[in-house]
Image 1 (cartoon, rainbow, N blue to C red):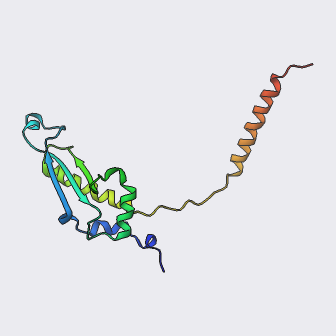
Image 2: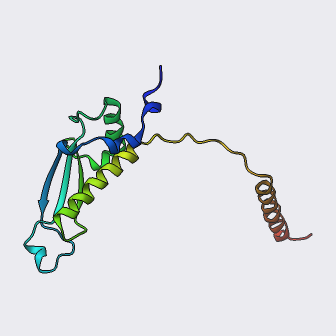
Image 3: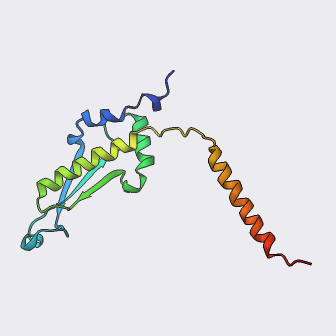
Length: 144
């Protein structure tokens, strides 16, 4: 049996259409906008309910819930906000791009650390530093 972690391919996230599962909300932005800033709702908020998604496997849902826990609210929704531009449409595109990037990073398997040994030069430098410190302390002693 193959582990589900090994079969995860994060690049497939970009080929799934999550759009029907998105919930967008627009509000007044604190970003750029000039006179429009107080009149037009340009800030875009994307809400995505992770647990009820039909496009994610149970394993993917648990990985996302664990890795993006700080971005998931009490209702189980992944919350992403954009207010960088003056246009609601551009902010909506940005928020969707951020969503796919977050999912890609969350579902990317963690590389296993390969233990390495210190090089000979590093060992020599460490020992030389120890000798220097020892010599310095030796020189502090009073001679009798």
